[in-house]
Length: 189
Image (cartoon, rainbow, N blue to C red):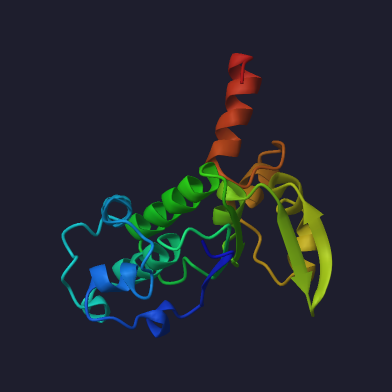
């Protein structure tokens, strides 16, 4: 097993093989066919095994690269802006893959400017500006702080604006609003 799997910001530069199957097994003699098929199914690529990776959609290409990384069974995934330019369906698949990898005991470190994504899937958020750490903590705390967002060059999430305008507790995701409504209106979590 490899210790670290790294996904570049431009994953197309990581595609080297002539087929999706070759991409997932490239220079990886230890990976079993059953593992590759399982990954292909999770990646929704089971019907693309013989396709030329660069001929696939952007979302599919990204999933091929993620599959090749996961086939090497790393302990840590480093993902550089993995959701840039992805449609909603691809975004959901990426979130599922990150959750799956995490549930299997892996650790994921990803860089993103997508505050909603970070608040949905991150256990911890680190904000940096000019190479310096300016915040480190729980997503709902860090990503609802206007000063930190501004200092980190990030955009205020729309739901934070809405929750503040309605004088609700600071919410940055739909799930956060749902939790507030369940607690405040229905008296339960």
